[in-house]
Every structure is written in structure tokens, then in C-alpha cells.
Image 1: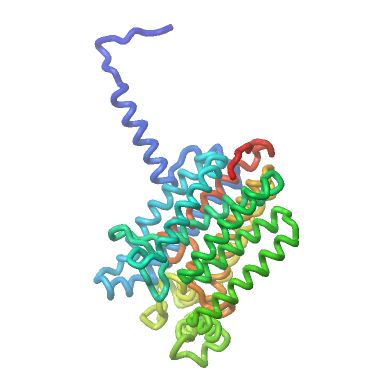
Image 2: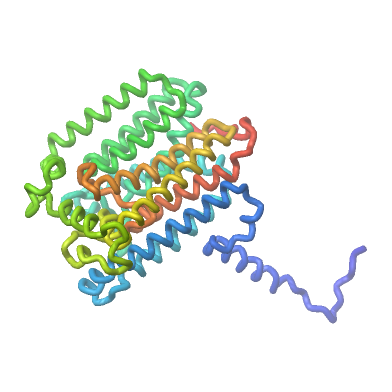
Length: 408
């Protein structure tokens, strides 16, 4: 039965539509309050909350590590904390959009994003456009907004590598060589910035995806040797990279020079003892440990939370990685499996590399600790990667033939 509109009752449409729009924006901009989560798979829900827990830990640690520096440099101890909140807001918006988009659509968009970011990476090498920081031109500024394209391209490389290697036998040789050349161009341009650590990380992530896809060991071995050769060439031509390796081998011999940062990091970690000094009580962050709120923030964490805190954090990374690999195993489609493996490799692998640098187990690099270190581009990249992993978890029960995209 259809009821005629009575003149005594006003039309509610003008009020309902803005209300629904506000609900939609609230769900997109504040993804913690998402009513649709109840219908997700258990793995997707757990990964989502683990990501938020990781993010919350990062905010707490950043507040502690950056307060004194912000107070000294800007007269505001919350300067870096507030800036990080803005990037987290943007990153969570992207995270929520990704977890609600079909993965097939995301995969189709990835190839266009790679070329756009490839152009931006090339722009960082153009004098007057790229901004040089600490001897490397990795930044582009649009007004007061600075971005690092080599960070933003990481999740895009995971997506396109998953498409290429997951459907390797379906592509013509020309398509294969086209994308391999594109990947090589990305890594080559990042090396020219110079940024050996990011180029090496991107290369290792794509190599792991290729290995997991079952690609011929001849191809995988050739790629590994080529990557090693590029790294040797880069170190041969970049003096500061050679100095980093030498200082890593014996930092105490160069404690007043190139080994200073690693020595201060080791002192911070050793000072933490078993239980740590306590939140906010790190001594090395008081202008002894350089850039303690970015690449070496783990040293501050170790000093304040001690050996027990470090073990708990490593166990957390193990749980996160195991759950991510469980999602990959449960996923029916091979491309989706490789996306999950790539996301786990990127998030957990980069975390382990950062911790290895801070503890002196690996040569000093410029890799941030995902979801913890200060930095807008790194935060956006990490949250998008986590969003992709959650999205795969949401679609892990899809049949193997569900994805029929023809992305290159």
C-alpha cells in the first residue's frame, strides 16, 4: 500500500540525505568506528585492531621521543606529535577506503599509480624541484607539504608485482619485460637519489613475491645476483655508504665520527636493562642520540621499556606476521596470496631491518620503523599496506576465479 504524502507532514528527504552523508563521512574519516566490521572475517577484524594497537604504541613512543626536540626547536613539545596526528588522520582515511574497495579495483589502479609516482621520483632528481636532506634528494615540496615518493610507491610495487608474478604464464613476453623494466627503472631512480636502503627494501619485497609465486629459480637467482651487483656498484660510487658499512663493523673505533649514532643507540639499548627506565625517562634522547624520533626510535623504546618490552614488541610483530601469512594461506586466488605475502614482507621485514640497524646487527640505513617513526610519507605508506592486508583478509574466502582483471 502506498501512502500519499500529507501536507501536514513535511518532506524529510532534505534532512535525511545530509544525515546519511555525515554518517558516511564519519565512517570514512574515523575508521575506528565502523559498524560494518561486525560482518568481516575474524582474521580481518584481528588484523584491523592489531594495526590500531601498533599505531597507538607509535604515538605514545613518538610523544616521548620527540617532546624535548620539539620544545627546543619550535618552542612546542607537541610539534612533531601534532604533525604526526595529521598524517595519521590522512592515512586512516586511505586505510578505510582501501578496506572497503574491492581488491580487483585496487589492483587495476596500482599500475597507474606506479607511473605517476615514477614521474615524481624522477622529479626529485631535477635541481630546483627535489629537496636535498642529509646529502640525498628524496623530497618534493608543494608549499609547506613535503612528500617522499619513494615511500609512497612501496604498496603500489607490492600490488603490481603480485599481478605480474601471480599471472606470469598468462602474460606475453613483451608485457613481462615491460614491467620488469619498469621495476628496474623505479629501483634505479631511487638509487640515484641516492637511497640504497629503500631501493634494497623494494627489491627484496618484489623478490620475495616472485619467489613465493613459484617463478623459476633461474629467474629468481638472476634477479638476486643483479640486485647484489647494483648494491656493490652503489656502494663503490657513494662514499657515505662505504663509511656507514665501515662504522657498522667497528662503531666504537669511530665513536666521534660516523659511528657516533650507532654507539649512542647501543648505549640507549644497554641502559634500558631488563625492565627499562620507564616511559618518558630515556636519557639518550636528550640530544645524545641523533634523530631519535625517526630512524632510531627503537633505541628510545628499548631504553624506556627494557629487554622485556623489546621481547613483547618482537612477539607482537611475530603474531602480526603469522596472522598475515595465515591470510595468505587461506586465500584462494594466487594474486591475492602474493599481495598478502608482499604486505607482510614490507611491514614486518622493514621493522626487522630497522631494529637490526638500531641494535648494530645491520649497517646503518634510513629506513623508518613502520607506524612508529615520525614521517608523513612513511605513515601513509604503512597504513595503506596494512589496509591492503586487511582487505585481502576480507576477501580470503572468495573463489579462485573471482578475479578476472586484465591489468598489465
